[in-house]
Length: 147
Image (cartoon, rainbow, N blue to C red):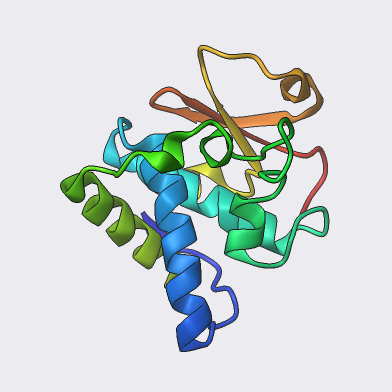
């Protein structure tokens, strides 16, 4: 893990909100992954915040599409996972990963990835993107061209 690009410093209230949403993404999507895999999920969210195709806030990215029955960007926001309380230890670990990412310390091996999926599923969008890396069970990819 190395220091990557910094996003604009959020106000204290928006920082707390961004930290919670990013922690949820790391906790719910990557809790069973090795540390490097958990660290790789956070920059995908932050890369989307910087990409013109996505909302301009961490929570906006994480919860995009959750108001619909289908179309969730992150499946845990609409599959009922948020109804279960996370294990305290796993939540603390995810929060540390999220806190580091918001401070600019990200897993650089996923580069400009804007997408990831587990290796046991094959979403229809996977064929349209460029694969960057696989860490643990997650395959990381991005739109063709640059961000």
